[in-house]
Length: 346
Image 1: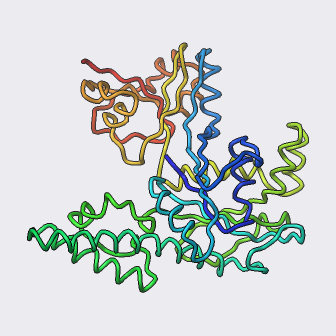
Image 2: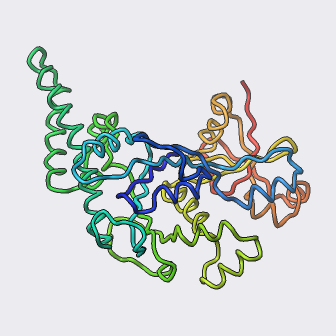
């Protein structure tokens, strides 16, 4: 899963990316996006690794892409956003923190104004894609008349009108056939978007009810920088003083994972404990295919126990003695935290 980090200049995007990934802020980025994959914190992986004395453990991961700063009505912005269409969702960083030593390109703090600028740039990037495609369709229609081209043209004109009215395409009703026509464009305004409010320390637990259609999460990049320097016990005391339970970075990683409607199932043994990422709603056979396509093709059954039941039993042997393992077929919908052994034949 790929999450694109976007925002205006001096909102704290690069500092946040540096904290998430361990890549220093002085790392040269130029005009191209930076990319790094990070582990999704999961105590279940740690527990199973100890339980099975696994030689290796593998966490689920999220790829974070740092998109170059958005600059109002800039050609560089248009190109950067169009190139970012491969991401699965966007995390928009908005600046709430006040710091006289950090320049603000618009000279004042205004979350709604800043988000409106970013939304408009998303819309503009999609409009450019649509207009370019419409030009090509017009040329093709001069030589050939195809019903599919005409349908695509009519759809794109309708979507263009919605964008020009300031409406994101994920708010526009389209049928399955129309969805297939636009899928290849990977329109930015079709992708999920959530907001990271980079705030002052005293605002970490505040609610910013300014964005009806978008979930928000508060993070203080400045505080996270300080936390990184502390020992474990000092961190716990620091969290307690701020009335928070865990580092904001860990919350952000989990938040991003869940916002994309992803979940993790686990496999465990002496060789390896592994957390596997799947889309919510996947069947057992589809989940097996995430490990290897042969697992899905030759799927026979899955032996399943939920992590909580296995942890409570204390061992695989005791869980089996208590009858906590069950056999599931290919249509079983996998749950987050399922520990699975796949049986297959190739």
